[in-house]
Picture (cartoon, helix red, strand yellow):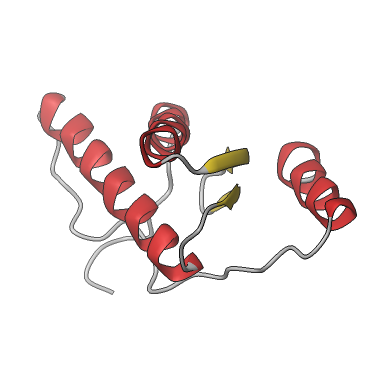
Length: 108
């Protein structure tokens, strides 16, 4: 590893959640739930795009905002914030959507 593991603090987690919400709004994607933890993020979102593309866009914009935050505080800027890839799942029905939203909001 080139850097120590990334542990997001409270301010960074809020930046990530806000960035995801803003990007979804700009793109016209339906954001159902987002919850950023210290070591991972869960997002329930729907759009007429490939999940990998959505994931990559969200990671890229969150990286930009986190780097801007570090620079504004004169901190050393991390080179790598996220692991490669990440999981994505298709949700096929309303009940599964409700379960996914409930998990992200209440069960982490």
